[in-house]
Structure formats: C-alpha cells, structure tokens
Length: 405
Image (cartoon, rainbow, N blue to C red; front, side, top):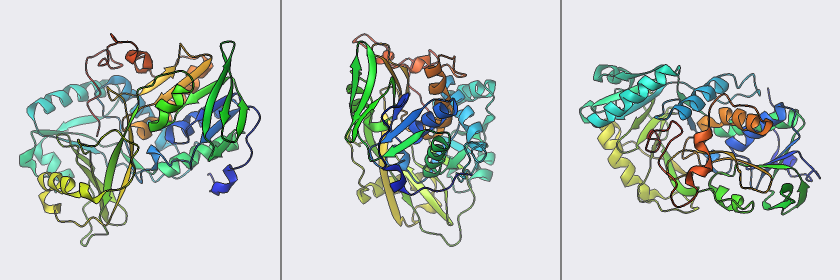
C-alpha cells in the first residue's frame, strides 16, 4: 500500500534530464507517468499546482463502461478492471463503490439509441441491460417513473475518489524511480533539428526527448508551445452535497436523467451528491461555486425525484470539464510536431473513469507497441483543416459520443 506524502516533498529541485516529461498532474497524467515508469522509463511528472487540482479535483468521480462509441466502452471496461485491482497495483485505497449506473431515458428515441448501445456493449463484455419500470423502481424508488420511457443499467459501474487515485499513481511513480514535481509550470518546449530537446519551466530547463501533454482544460495553451492546436475548451461544472439526512437516503445507483443531465447518488455520511450541466455555461476558466445555479438543479431534481425536491444543499463544488467538439478524447502522437509529442486530453467529462486504460495506451504508443484498445479515431488529426470531419467517432459512426453528463 502507498503511504501519504506531504505536498512539500514534491517541491524539490528538478532533475537535469528525463527520458519523458509528462505535463499535467491529474488522473490522466498520473496514470500515464505510472505506466511509463512501470515500463522502465525515466519519467518526470510536472504539475503547475497541487496534484489533482484541476479537472481531477472533483470530490467523487464516476467509473463506468456505458458509452455509445466502442473505443470508449473498451477504455471504460478496461479501466474498471484496473480500478478494481488498484489496491494491489499500484497499491492504494481509492474508496471504490459499485452501486451501478442507471440512465433514465425520457423519450422513445433515447430508448432506441440505448438499445443499440447496450447490444454493442454486451458484445464487448459489458454486462449492461435495458430495464422496465419495475426494475427501475427496485433500484431507485425516488424516481418518477411516469417521466421516463425506459432505462439502461450496468451493475459494475460506480464511483471512486480522484485524489486517492492520483496520489496512488504518483506514489507508484516515485516508488519505481520516477520523479513527481508540483508547483512547476511548463513555459516552453524546445526543439532542435526536428527533435524535442528540452522542456523549459519557471524553475529551469529539463533535457528530454519526449513530452506527453495531459494538461486537461489547459491543454490548448500547453500544446501551442509545441506548435500544436488541440481543440480543448474549459466549461464550469458544479455539484452540490446535502448534509446527512434523517432518515438516511436509500442506497441507490449513480442515477442520471439523460434528458436534462441531472444526476444524483449517495455520498458519505448519509447524504446525497447532486449535479447537472448548465447549458448556458460559457467557455471560461471559472472554478468559483455559484449558488445561483441551485434553481436549475432543483427544477431538474423535482422532475426526476419529486420526493427529494426540498432536500437541503449544505455545500457545493465547482470544477472544469475539458470539452472537445465531438465529446471524444484526444489521444495519440502528433505527426507534425518537431519530435516526439504525445497527448491525452479533452476527455469531456470521462477522463477520470478512463485514466487507467489511457495510461496503458500512451505507454504502448510511446514504446511503439499496438495498444489493446484502438484509439486511432481519437487522433487530433480529425479536427485538422477546414474540410475535416468533426463528427466521426472512433467507431467510424457519424455523431459525437452521446453518453456524457
């Protein structure tokens, strides 16, 4: 098991050289760094603030394999396997709970879409299924069943604690001989003769031959230092927590109203976590919690679960989603960069749940091996040029990933 480290331990001097520099200390960057270190690579993980201070800073992160795109299903499914084994490798308690994910579907068209997705998920080893109203009532008695035409459910899904995951991976990096440094900002990427030669930071220069960009919502700016345009935009997302309720709420799945994006599930001690995406949210690096969001939340809560409409919200949290135009990630190696620049960013709300598998993928891409999941459709090249097809998913189907919240 990993032991806790004091933040000051990671403010030491930078090494003069690293084989690979990973920029971004969230779940994706920490996973990438861990898997590279496990592969024998001398890796340096850089974070401009504290670990998990960006998009991975959310108190609780969902884990699931229910998606509409096969590659997302595979990444989610593999990540579930790795999260279930996290206590052994890298070795940390991440508070994993698996009450399942329940998607509530308001329209018949939604049901048809999810029936197709569930069939595809089942073919790929995911035990998801469509539910009738009686089954939904047994799983979550709070739901107003008259509002929904159907539902989809996977019992293996659930949630874990992102801070624990990031710390677990970071401690694993250090145990394997890699280096983790916080409060270090990457200021430039130096290339010479068509090769990466160094990463410049506000604390000095680190010689390296490869960089992996995992800066979440800040990826566009960091990528520009390597001459790349990675289309990632920041959007604020907010969640609220009830105090401990009396009586304590029933044990329920992670429940999502697919029509409004409202979601809720249990939160310790004896409370609920409530969330919804505000469609009026502008592109901005805004992470201040705004209680003016509560009427939108209560309206959706009252429609989905009327019995809970008056539960108090004791506190809230605001963080950033890193969104791409088609709600799919950017994963790959830049072909037009001066040297080896890899990237894993823009996960549009499902980065935490895919982080373990993405770490494996980037490790294999760096080593020249074929990853177990085909992520070629996630290349940033799909957005290159005025005639690029910006709606093709990794499966080749038209349209963005539909199962996002």
